[in-house]
Amino acid sequence: MKKIYLFVLLACYSVFCFGQKDSAGNNYKPHAVINYQSSISKGDLAFSGKDYLTAKRFYKEAASVKPSESYPKEQIEKCDNKMSSDSWMSSELDCPCLYAHSPVISSATKSEYTEMVTKDTLVYSVFPGKVSSVVFDSIKHTYTVSVKHGKYIAKYSNLSGTHFKQGDEVKEGDKIGFFKGKYAEYMLRFSIWNGKENEDIKKYVRCKYL
Image (cartoon, rainbow, N blue to C red; front, side, top):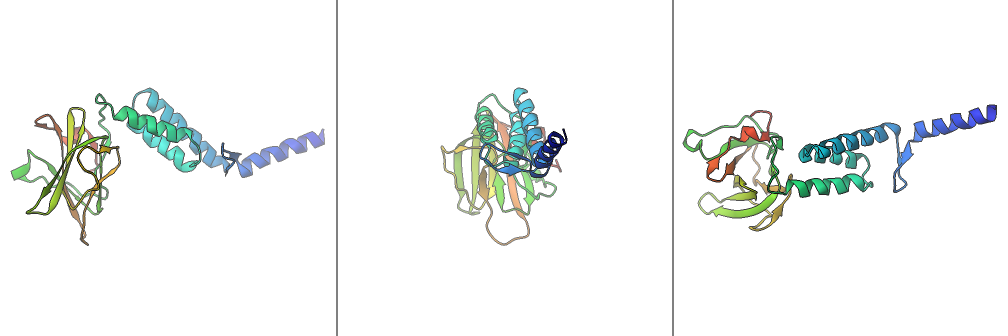
């Protein structure tokens, strides 16, 4: 009886101290296993509720905990495919730039875009779609990249450059453009259009200052 008890105790100790192995044979600590399972459960719940953006975020969390697991990667791809459909739109889109300050809205151009001041040199696509145009301003030497998603078009202006061209497919979170030069701050001019109507980006974009 003592031997059986000792065997069970050692088995429990092994699981607690060394965790579990994934499908690739990697060892994970118990807290990592719990975090992974929690993220997967939350992702699956959001996915079943058709909140693909939230689901993708949880699957990405799970993938960061267990990089070798295939399930979260497969689900991320499914989320991207769902979000690429014309019928999908969210009120929880990520901000197109990080480390941003409060926006400055120019009175002369208030009907055209919102200006966002950022310390980051990168600009990210807020939703998936296809690049409908890349326009270079030869006077200001800046680019405007337009991404079409169903009936919506997101415009990213005042960029120093982009790695995309017209017709390219873009995923949510892709680096749509960048700023050059060693400056403390950069200015992104951003807008979302529904046909000829300029949408209030506060309806869709999740920026803390909006």
